[in-house]
Image (cartoon, rainbow over the protein chains, first blue to last red):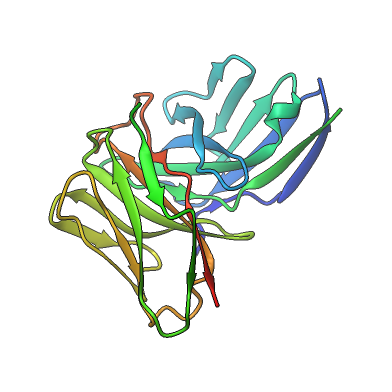
Length: 112
Length: 116
């Protein structure tokens, strides 16, 4: 049973606009969340993370929002750039664990 | 440069054969992981290891085996018992206590395994 879900397999956005990627989780023990970015034929690279004690974390063009009551997090990319075209994975873990549970990924395409 | 090296990048296997995928890291990380990626299914954990000579099964360990004889190396063997081995395999490493740091799991560039 998948504990981290990304229900939108793909997203197309115009260059310069906002990209919003969503992620839901079912395990209430999860208390740390991450986003990874992956280009074809390469390994994922870490993008941004957030602890459950926060509801927002920002790093440059990337902001992650966490809504614990809804078990939902989102990644905002503003403004979107062509180099942002990639697959984005949401991941989660909980205290005393170092393993990650990944979602299925969302493919973002930024149109010129 | 520190990183994770997976080899080969592409691998072909005949049915009924075992094949071993290599993963080496020079990041001095204690923990290492193997994932499998299939289209539309994200990353699924096969095996993971926290320390040398110790490893645990992940979510989809059937048909796979690993060893951890050295801190730097975590090879994965895909056995003939794995009925659907065609996939993209990713190796990762991390400190055991990475939370809150900027060093969560680092990934290699993967090995694509295909059945002839």
